[in-house]
Image (cartoon, rainbow, N blue to C red; front, side, top):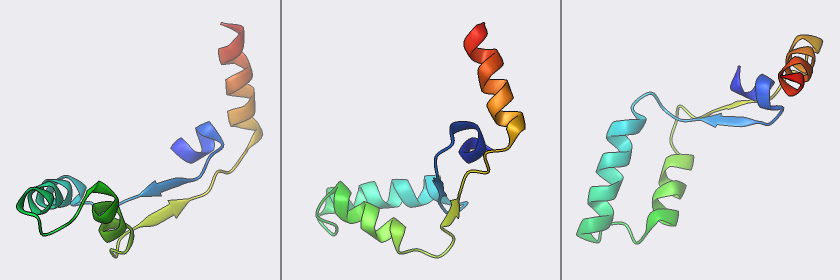
Length: 70
């Protein structure tokens, strides 16, 4: 829905994203992972990542036109 509304692809991570994010921050703090960029690469290589491409239906385009008129 977000991809459709914005017209941009959306990457959705695993359902355990909060836990994974906390663990990665702890690993950075402990020096096990070098930095945030490296942590992002770890997440990008995990199973469970899903790409949602936009479906520019006329319904979303019309809704955006109504929004702009408000």
